[in-house]
Length: 274
Length: 274
Image (cartoon, rainbow over all chains, first blue to last red; front, side, top):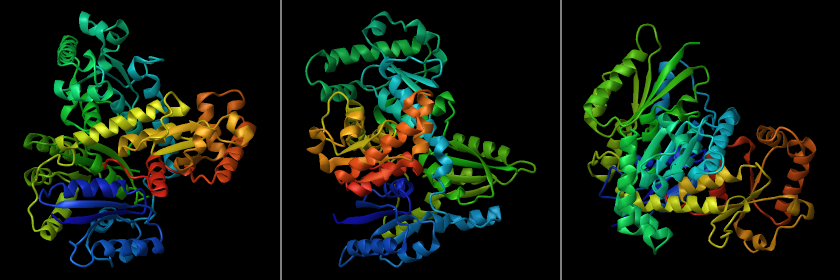
């Protein structure tokens, strides 16, 4: 099937255009897409370069390109729109109704969502990341008293990436502790965790998925055997029930979704907003 | 000044509604906002709960709420829209023109942007995160031959969070190596880095900002002294010039922007899309 070119244009990183566009194009199962991000379009020259790139993708017999953009400046939007393709821009669509509601004109300043005002947010995210690293895998500092949440689960259930995502995205202090034979065989959590029981959150995962992930890391041995994996997950589930620890099954979710579900379920407040 | 309630509604995590809404409301400098995310609205009951919450925020004398939403299902959108407030929904605005262009009806399936089809992406992001952790701060494995990019810079210039963000967001294999007295005094990089020169990317930072960050970590001693910080940054800049290493000044940018600029500048391909 012919691929259709999809462009994400931005005067900034393009993350907003990408997330917006991605959630829209995945609604159409019958299409194949070739995705390209064109970030940092902050001058008329760069806007004209983007026009050339888009026209190139849309020439002779190709499917009409789709252009998702988040260009604040009306002049740059006007240039880009001269290219071929279906153009969808969030500022085009939504700035006017907001401006009417607020009875205020937009600043048209690019990068307002980041910039110097966000130094505080940057620091918080870095501190949260350092916290996650120092408190990864039951490690070094065990500053569980200042943690917002402590993830527990068996090895390779997704604890580390989830903690790092919570830190980088939301500035949340997330520690994690691995359930190993000590806990799994006795069914008991160490007392320093029981003291923080209200902060505990479990990660579960389907046995087959866990085997697959573990095999990537260590193909041989009991670590990824069906028997071992099932034993660990069964005992971990018992611990979650025994201590009434909420948990999420990570099998079907992306890291973003797991993180979001943890915040939603625990009520932990994010320290920064994206 | 009176705060205006802003809601981000989603049948998924709310990340798309947040990034969209945030880039729009920051265009209005004269407003104060109180932001609330209501994720996982995937049933009529939850949609009705959201209506109650929004109406509560918009009652008697309060400013009209603004509601950014990404609700795929038309029935849920219809319920939510019965609440007070200005409603802006990307599916409402953009699904129709896309459907016309593609000559295909949307699936209206929620969560298409994530889900099982993304197991491969999940694995890649986890592997990239493990790579970043194992190759953080010149550490353990030094698998620089499989790195996509190797960040260098002085201590606290932002290497670790940037590497982790590149891994989690884009599945990019990012290692980092700290410039310490060894390199700064001789002006020479170790040979294992020179061999990978095409992968090197520098992080610079303003002296005052670096002092501020270092003081948070270690308030006393030469580590955060004006003299030491200026020496390190001056010598690091010489190394970037000597070896013709591209670099970005991290002072004014968010982690997202730094990461995006690195990909843009190096041409490194992301292994996954958000």
